[in-house]
Image 1 (cartoon, protein in one colour):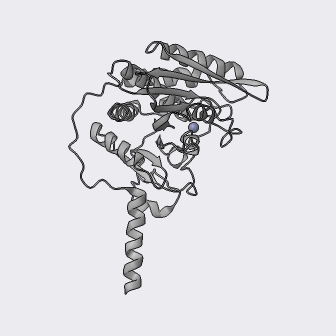
Image 2 (cartoon, helix red, strand yellow):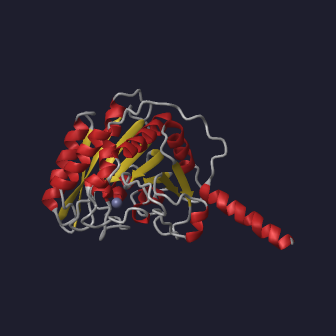
Length: 313
Ligand SMILES: [Zn+2]
């Protein structure tokens, strides 16, 4: 009996650590969503249709994408920097847009703009890049007391994934002496569906604690961190799009599958905001990852929640 009780209690502790349920949800505020869903759609369409493919082998398209991102960011800040580096004799570029005063404290929101293979990459990850543009617009209209960098990364995808040639590794290393309060990776934020049993999970036991419909946004974090549950709170407080968080070791497939992983390497708090990628979007890394499949109203809510969280830090 004692053994059973001990096992049950340990199980409950583990579930709590992973799911971090919100017991006291604060009142949903009826806020006017000031993120423009039509703008998000316009950018995702342009990037995925006119600037594709964007793999590491498509230098011209990568360079055109950098110009487009730079142009969009310059509408909202004068401080835009191109971070160049060379891999196998080819130059690759991150785009960094800065907001707020110069402080040692720094908040980073990033999204990769390259694509795996010859695909349009609408959800993966034109969606995240479009999110950066709307964040830039909102931040330029806000009173900020800390440095914020919005970074569009190159070389997130294979064959460079998990190497120090990832654009996000180059950026994380360049800010390693700063006090990075939080890095948020926008990694596929556009695919939502109300279909039954549309949501898969890395472990089937997770179906007991998370929704079976892919109609929510998730925030992914390491085991011992409050960063994801705090961002989840902001998303749930400021939008009516359900947000869930997961704190899990990287042994669980997908936990470190984006640019946040490189900020963890330098000891910084970092989370991934995602529609859960291939656990939901079956068009992931195919020619079918196209702009008309995405839900821009839901995306706008994700971006608004991230914005409210960033300015609250
Ligand atoms: Zn991606």
